[in-house]
Amino acid sequence: MPAELIQTVQTPESNYDQLTIAEATLVQQDLKKYLNLNPYLGPIRTIAGADISLSLHSETVFAGIVILSFPDLQPVSYSLIKSSTTFPYAPGYLAFREIPALLKAYEQISDKPDVVMFDGNGILHARRMGIASHFGILTDTVTMGCAKKKLVGKYDEPGDEKGRYCSVIDRQEEIGFALRTKNNLKPVFISPGNNMSLQDSLEIAMKCISKHRLPEPTRRAHEYVNLFRTGELREGYHEVNDLRLF
Image (cartoon, rainbow, N blue to C red; front, side):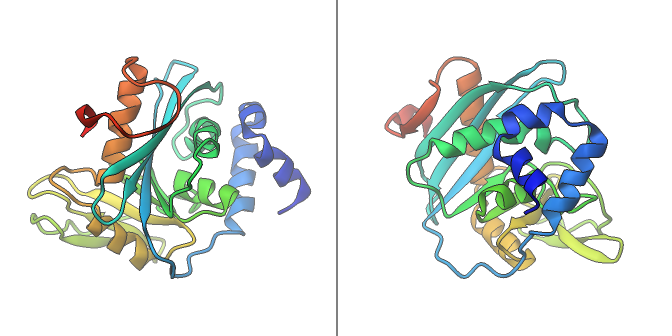
């Protein structure tokens, strides 16, 4: 990476808040040069979900990463961090508000997950640099996005049955999938983040579907972050030993 980019991303908690939108765009364009969408060939023993809770008008960030066994998708550990940000809310740049806290949560995990699924986008993004891609490049990890809303692109509505999907196309490029995870409910939007292919992201997402609209990794992350925000869980890295969370 260029020296100036390395300096920015090594301490994003201090540098990201100082960026303008124009400067953040340049960071995304530089990061894209290091994007790897080759097929993932390794085993998957654990998969994590990553999510944050952040009000539009608040500087406080509650971030969490929940690690699940794979393929049975049982929570085994979680990492929670309370942080802050002053980077402005702007669609397409949410990673600059969320990544510093998620990096702190990731750093305190002792046994890193094989794959991290984000409540957000990977390459399904105008500059192909959603939070999953951004995080994956910074950490050289295997990441993917699962967003509740489509950020860019067009798609044909998939069939109403669980498991049906259609490609999302932007500027004649396939950038992800609209995946129906529950009968007759709105699809979620799947895309690779880094170090995996489009097909990998779809296959992994399919294996993470349970009885809810959200795949289990991001659903669990959302659950744990909310418990953290309301004071029911403590900050730090913890093994899962409370059956009330299941």
